[in-house]
Length: 336
Image (tube, rainbow, N blue to C red):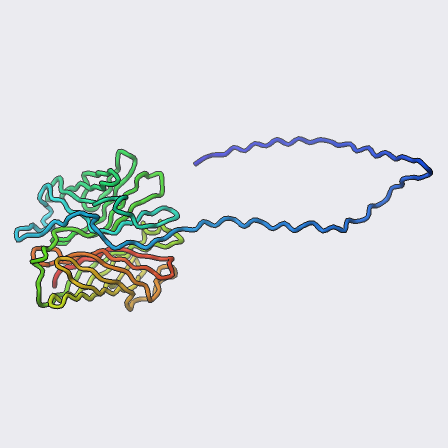
């Protein structure tokens, strides 16, 4: 904060006006009230205050930005065992936003690169990780799946992720300088991805996750709102391995006592990956400011995880066509 000390001096003066009366040629000057002026001063139009215009560009579809998946095998250990093999690395499949007080725009590969989690300290109480953002020159360690690390540069890294048996999902945040309002926030999934040849080619399955659907709302009027007010709900995804079709719903989305939309999922299977579109599904009436238009749409991109597609995880987006709101998050589920 800057303190301004304003000092002003006031000088008072007295001005004497001498009026002289002159006579000549028989004429004289006499006192009296002058005639009023007939001219009208031009009206002054006040300058309106400048209103800042915030920028909102919808989140981009998820990508690993070139990072290769870590594939599952028959001997792949469960992530619920806590002791993860030292040196194991996972590239994040993610959608990342570059957020300031007046803007929210998708971060590019040049801005962040292929973000990676690496196991550096296996531990029964929870393996410790190295969190790397190569394009920013950031390495934060040690970090658990849920933790905060202050950096020597003055920045901070936050991880807020969870795991199933083979899937990691959640969000992360990097603030380059805690004295500024710039944040990079990503929603991501990763883990032991199913190899394409191990995904079933027939039959069907339903994947479900209680509390595994997450979303953050970004409003043009308050881009920084993306850093709080996250909603959490349930994931249901139906996979038809015979024709490669996917359908599903993200439901029971809550933030405290507030509810959010149900989100419809419709997509396809391609090898070990999944992708498709999102839309508003039937759901609760929302508080003012959080509701999206009925024709809002977005995307989802993800993969199957586990030796035999035991799990699924993806990053999803949703954009209101009026351009004032967007959302992005993750979902995950186990085969039922």
